[in-house]
Amino acid sequence: MSRSGWIGAAVAAVVLGLAGCSAPAERAGGEPAAAGSAAPTTAGENSPPAADEVRSSENVRLVTNVPLSAPFDGEESWGTDLAFQDKYAYVGNYDGFTIHDISDPTKPVTVSRTLCPGGQNDISVSGNLLFLSIDDPRTDETCASKPAQGFGENAWEGIRIFDISDKAHPKYVSSVATACGSHTHSMVPGKDGQTLYLYVSSPGPEPESTTCTPPHNTISIVEVPLADPARSRVVNEPVVFNTAQKDADAGFGGCHDVTAYPEKNLAAGACFGDGVLLDISDPVRPVVLQQINDEENFSIWHSATFNDDATKVVFTDELGGGTAATCDSGTPRTKGANAIYDLKDNRLTLRSYFKIPREQTSTENCVAHNGSLIPVKGKDLMVQAWYQGGISIWDFTDSDNPREIGYFERGPLSGTGLGGSWSAYYYNGYIYSSDITKGLDVIEINDPLTDPAKQVKLDAFNVQTQVSYGGR
Image (tube, rainbow, N blue to C red; front, side):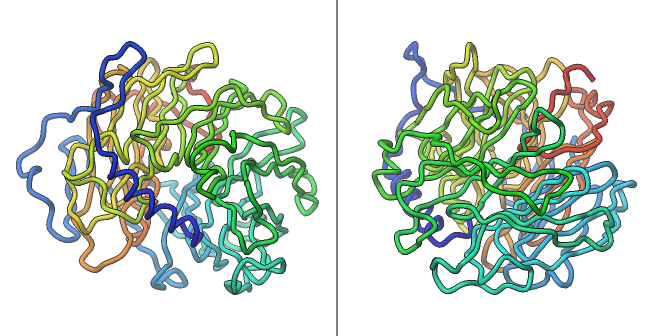
């Protein structure tokens, strides 16, 4: 969302996407795909919340909020993605990252805030290492760098690596420059247990750049020797989608996000104009199994989530790039939404769409964004961020008839600008939401459908690297 070209493409996508408003796409058999349905509404739900008012379904409650504070108190100190490890929650921010102790989820304690500017600081953790994605050109790779003027050969963007063995005093270790920077990244463990691979996704190309040249139809794979992370380096830049697609023709390509499922040897990539299914049996040399697109309803393929047994993939469409109001009555329910695909024999088949049922105002940036599974065996449940649309808890066990079962949201920001939940993930009994301007929300859902998830305990959780809970 931070790269200037990415913003421009996102705004253009709103115009192009809404210009083609039409009925839902059809499945192979000619039947219209379902657009999703809502659970019964509570009293007053049909009227928009007042500015900054907290509202939720009866089965959802806000447990607590930890507001942003110095040094993350600037106009663009925006909260971004989340990762978890043991009793800690790690929260990215355009100005760095925060470590919270969540031993008691009702009373999180801020352990440290590390100032290290570089949008968007997408975050993941492994052992004593923390990784940040930077896709804004900087004058150098250090935390003391400044925004670079343009995309010249001396500008830096890519992956930063920190040692977090001392949570109160994280230490910068090293960095790796990657083509077109790093908007997001996903971790894939090496087969030897001594190596970690990062799949780096980024938008591009930038015509004026020497490091982000056309056609940019690749991802970067960074090899991290766990015993010596300072030796991390790019080991491959595989092509992951066909440059003949419409977005490449328009001069814009790259992938936004890749979600890996190492136990299944699969990954799903959201590559702006396309979705891709990858075989990652050899993590250094992923193989494209299928490439899909949806020119009628999807504008910006943003992210992907497998269900637990890898028989489905949910792709999201970030129509407007997170900056536009697309959850209003003027936007079709198949746009800026989720698409549910069945996965069988390494082939993806579109089944339906899902979008939050509550209409948002014209001032609220709202679109499908980051979410995770809620671990209930035999069910396909998900919690998901929708920016100022709040968070939605929804059930896609029936691929044709997804439905919302709970929600949490605030009313429109009292000021202008971006806001709302960037990421909402379920971890060890609670939902944690990184709100762009409000900080960390801890939310609880009490519902017979989701209650079994409270028995599932994870030691670590990086959403873009899925692990199976089926045997837990």
